[in-house]
Length: 372
Image (cartoon, rainbow, N blue to C red; front, side, top):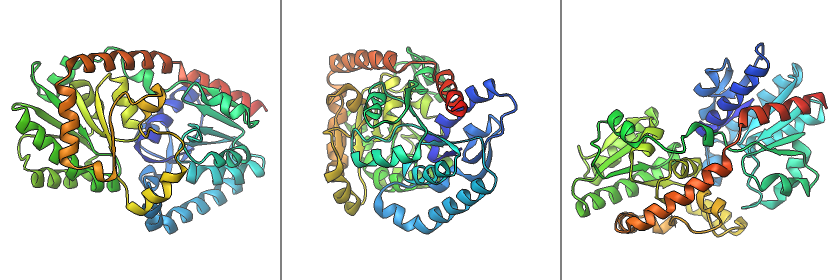
């Protein structure tokens, strides 16, 4: 198995729960993180090695990433597994899967690359690479079937992990917040490059919002290795002690908050499953942005908007990601409680759509693929 970054590790850990239930003697190895290790996974490299996004950012780490993939391919071809499961990270995994499939190793790709959003030509590589694709969203198997690619809708595992009615009061007690507090959760991203591009603007917006809404509490879940960067950004923004920087605990922060300022990515779907109004923002190196923009097929970047097929929540990109614009978008939510209630209802319906027995459905599909 190969899972890149924290979101892939989470998905792979949930999948391993089902696989080890079906096959108690399962041996799983490759690239992964702590959620996978909880189910006996043996990491040859940590998942952080693949946690890079954007053309420019990838170039900086290109030699190391390609070196890891070459070593992994040689190792797997020398001692073939019964199956290889690539979890997301398509730029890394699809090429690896293609080489393994060509040598007769069964390959499964978990998380359909978003060919419906951008880079539709990638479907040809998926066909060459994957014996089966496990899809998180209900419309994806039909798209793949038209291209002759076997696929199964397994739902989104997070829809089973996150309760339909989050315990906001319990989460607030856990974080030392009062029941009546107004709470903003700030999630600038799980990669170092995302924190570098977002943290200063996000925390500057939080400081502005605190001045407009005295008493507002700000919580920032942080990967421990990135905590010093976030603390420095909070200090520069003038937040000082008026912010709680947490070691992880992103789910507690989302459960506790009234709304969130959040970087585009899997975390936006988590926020939607917690039924939280949000402002989605994303900024990358300007070269990366110029290269990616023409390939984007949809008007939305955030998963909640893509799944709802509407601008349910605001999205700000590139130059719009500044403290003034972000703070105003957040203030617009707080001054419209009826809109906040409406979006919570819409996200409740989305939650039901995505709730499936993912681990069992995925394990069934993998077993059928192994049986050929």
